[in-house]
Length: 321
Image (cartoon, rainbow, N blue to C red; front, side, top):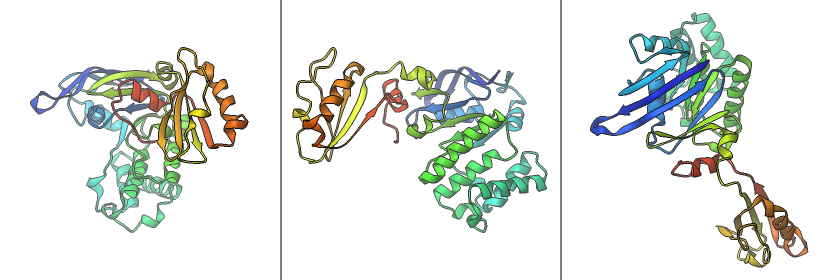
């Protein structure tokens, strides 16, 4: 069964601007699905339509097989889906425990059960130190973390996240991704998320939709999309002397289909080149033989990533590393 199905979804704003322009996407029940795209691509508009907060100009949205763009659809969304927005402004005067408890109660939990789940999340994410401060006085990262916890209250079949790791420190970012994967595996919860943190999200996402200018530019598993982009291997290396010229190290290396190696300076002694897979061994041998290794401070091999997919299949801009 599909959790969500959109068919030819269109949303026009004032002036005829098409925020979504014929989006057809099927999100399977129980998968972790990611939406990638530059700012203004139409991602948040799509999420708001999935939540019934914004009516489409045309097209249809089905939630577990039932149309939700018709009368009564919003009530069905409320029962089955939770949405973690980028800001929790309506609860600015409440402290985190109160915000979590009220969220659970509004979703149908009795106050005792909501309070217990709230305290479990506070303990899990070490939010106890924030318990006496209103949400409006928390930092951006603290608000984001509490908002993430709010999404889990009164466990829904589908949870939608809009930039769940923005403003978080590395430790909490890892905890967020671990929580998403754990709940998905244990309960089969469908997770839909928008993120710009592609490097981290790649480890979590099962399927990806890349959106730009209101259209779906690419859709598939991470592996499927990677197979569609340039399959050359990226090789990065840093010279011991930042001002040294690396050409002599790789002089004479021939790559299939192209003579020599094209090097690009990344600054401060860091260099990058794209190498045909068939030539990787030859390049590595040259870098690490007696003439080259003494000039190197570090090097690494990078296979095509989800970020490469984003850039080559319509992303239109670089995402955060």
